[in-house]
Amino acid sequence: MPDARIVALAGGVGAARFLQGLADVIPRERLFVIGNVGDDAEIHGLHVSPDLDTVMYTLAGLNDPKRGWGIRGDTFRCLEFLSMIGVETWFGLGDRDLAIHLYRTGRLREGAKLSEVTAELCAALLVDSALVPATDQRLRTLVETPAGMLEFQDWFVRRGARGHVRSLRLEGAARARPAPGVLEAIAGAAAVLVCPSNPFISIGPILAVRGLREALRRTGAPVAAISPIVGGRALKGPAARMMKDLGHAATAAGVAGLYRDFVNVFVLDQKDRRLAPEIEKMEMRAVVTNTIMRGAARRRELAQAVLEALGIA
Ligand code: FO1
Image (cartoon, rainbow, N blue to C red; front, top):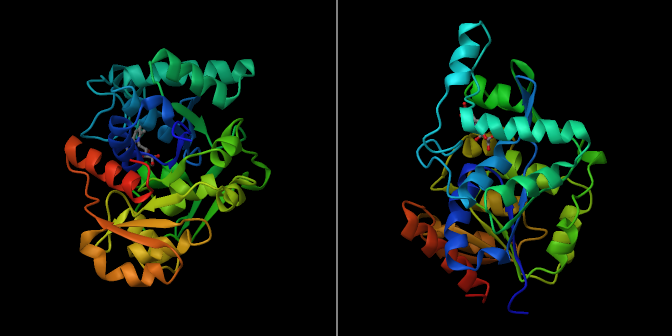
């Protein structure tokens, strides 16, 4: 089935970088992205979907490559004025970015589903790939720290993801059903890719949606994951520290262990090649390549290497 879709499970910044490379080496219409909603938040009364937006802006060519989130060249006049009238503005919402949240919030209040609104926004921004939230239901990541149980963005942005993580709670996961098309996309995929994202806060909420992990176990398509940890450190964000805090080795093999029930091919960096035998013991094929995505050429090479490992390129 040469034209079947390539399905990607994606968090935010790390995933978007990888998807940018992937979208350069396959026809964009073949790409079906299942996005994380665990870090969605209500900010200034608006529904913000940071991971969906990071992927959407990237696929639309609007992303800010330096920050990793938000829109390139955006201004922050609205936030400056909010701050002037005494409102806390720790979450950096740009003026154009706000337009997206205004639209999303309005449509959700009218009764539209998050997946419908996301499709409308993607069409308006000329994104040719499908981007679908893992679920239309409310699913929120809560982080237990010594300071108590915190909403995800409060912990991640406001407090700089500081302090040890004692546990995570995926509120609403038990009731969350996959958004329309998600299970069908996994079942009929040419391949499924787990992007190099944080396994707990980016991929974890996707896997927690009812039936989704099971669909990954059952699909006839090969499933590959790319390690977000290289040399014991996360490509971006707190993944390595969280692995330790939550009782796992902060290594590519530690990540592979979290996915061992549904991943067939695990892609790790050449720095970690000594971990390949440990990963292969988990009945996955270990593929060693350069996973550091510095620049567009490296992103494309990584995407190409993953597709080749799956026999798709
Ligand atoms: N991340 C930050 O570290 N600081 C911010 O002020 C911030 C604002 C922001 C606004 C819109 C958006 O879509 C994402 C934003 N992010 C910000 C990124 C986001 O909090 C995280 O990267 C993800 O939630 C984790 O994947």
